[in-house]
Amino acid sequence: MADSKISGLPASTTPLAGTEVLPIVQGTTTKQVSIANVTAGRAVASLNLSTSGSTSTTPVLNFNASNCNLALGGTISGSYLQSVMQNKSGTAGASTNWAVSNDLGTDSTYYGEFGMNSSVFSASTPADYFSINNGIYFSGHDGDISLGSGNGYKTYFAWGSTGQSAHVINNTGALGFSTNLGTTPATSGTTGFGTSGQVLVSAGSAAAPAWSGTLTGLTSIATSGVITQQAGKSTPYSLLSTGIPFVMVSSGTMGNNGALTGITAVAVAYSRAYVYLPANAISTGSAAGWYYAVFSSTTAATVYNNTYTTGNPTVPASPTAFSTTGPGAYTQTTNNIAGPQISFPANAVSTNANFLINHNVTNNNSAGTKITGAKIGTTPLLSQLNTTTAATTANITYAFLQGTLTNIRSYPYVNGVTVGNVTADFGTTQTISGYLQIFSSASDTITLEQFSIVVTP
Image (cartoon, rainbow, N blue to C red; front, top):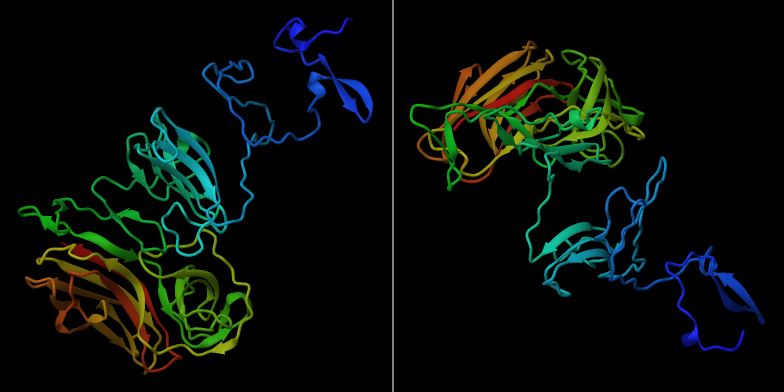
């Protein structure tokens, strides 16, 4: 063939089949390679990929992609198909972002982004919640963000160590807390909605909130935060209620992995309970606190690494076993210890409010004084002193406000000792708790079998 310029060659037929050949120099020899094999078998680096056209990829995808400038598809049986974008720089301020924008978009306005920060993105306290080290974020700028189903499906907010728990918004807009996982999408997310009229009660930072009690007959919370009563109506609601025993165990012996023995006998072998143990009782360095326990007898139990701090106590679905070396004998504290408790928000009741506090108690029969009661903050509302009375005791008290959020009258309904007028400012957040104390001897034991607080606002 006579020499020709490239510009003088006839145009090829496109799209190319991939079998067309190009000349290349390999070593010192001129060889040929097909178009399809130019990059076959080797990674091709691309710092920037820019597209300006659109191509229908049907039938690679199962929908019409004629408006796509980038379409990816594949069939991966039994596994996942992924596209990966990684910023391997471990430096401050480094992140990986997928950004979208519109006709008004610039480098700093009218865009949305999904991204992940480097492990050292912020050197100290982050400037905002989008700057947390290793943080994954979705953010919008100069536009509203909508999240949810566009055609009647549920929206889940997953939580837990593996995403095994979730709150849900269903297709009617109802909120379900700690909802269920069913065998199908239709049977998942169908629980946790409570019943009409119930209020949402916080469990603090130790557990998820839950619907509890009712506010039937009450107006909504006013601007001041005070719950006001409708004329002639006053409906109590449950603030805290637990039937899980809180056991102030005696001194005893702690073996390996939370094996508790040698304690003074409790009323029954509780299948679930929280026991109070002092610092270093489980192992060297273990914290004092309430630990979940399962009793094998009235004098022995297995203690688990699940703790209670505040709110309605729960039974762990899968208790976390200790893997520890027990210290052997330990001595129980004889101090006053708060058991079940809950935080009550500031200004959440009127000056006509009252609180019904109920607890049931068991203890060993001995000459030593065992004490239970209720407190608002550090102020006791009642105290129950037992010695040789080992039977379960019902003890109920009314604490009611007297025209002011700071003046309280405590009145025992059955048993107990009144402390008269006390001061506790309900214009500020208060903690209401039940407490236990083996006052005279660390060899005694006392159990708060049940504790509840009912509020009439």
